[in-house]
Image (cartoon, rainbow, N blue to C red; front, side, top):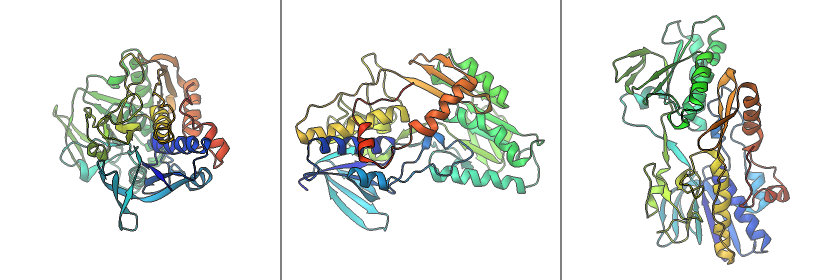
Length: 402
């Protein structure tokens, strides 16, 4: 091969970057000259937006057949160092061997990681739903509660962080606990948010609906306080409240993957690389950033892509296409995603669907839930392992929104 595009990460942005790059190369008849290589521990797409659910089996679909059908290669390993000056990567393979891989274009699509501040006891006693393995650990822990002696701590789950993931996780917990411990068991689910209100980023329009829905689901809201410490039996807040709980789930924010720090140039407060309109890192020749590691303008109004699969899908397509286009002497495609929607799962209550950055409510309860099921079970999953079908939806203009 004459040229190589390396994509780091096989999440939403990484997968679609690979497919978009492969499509552009195929259309130009250049598949024998330019190869696309994805580097990740496994050729799998973890459906992270669904890890708050009780049933998490098969939420990491294998991408091997899809990659084979579209001519994308996969290297199983973990990137240790990115040398942008020499365009070289140091990789530890899953077998533990140190390898090097050169690139002509690099797409960083490593996603985000859970923000874990130095709260005493968090690492030892906290749970989370950030990654598939984390969700499995929580699932196993909750199942084991049924074999423990009844107590208020056993029957209580505290979710820390009142953002999207925290709200969706908390809304599921009362029904989830009752299914495990018995329908007549008095259970308690508490959502703690350091801001004065839950869902601080959601704005005033949908917040009363969210609060009412959580209350109807049986979730207690504790706002305006932080977690001071966590131990085996519960936690203490900065306001002095002690909550006995055998289960504390941490969902308080995300940060760009640490590899983003190895790319020179400006980074935002979340560690994301501030990219140009084509998702290129301005101070790192040949590097594109996409998904949760990219600070990218979605429109001309000052809005910036959120750390969400909604934005990652489009960001990935654009970054992958531009990486290939820059080698094929094709025009670059500017990233633009002016339409913004949210669909928040609220457990047995239903779901809340909003449109616009001001989050105007469009659907609630069962109507919203039907849309959420459609998104969660169809829209965000990878396409069939068929080249024509995959390439048909891998162009940089393709966007799925209601």
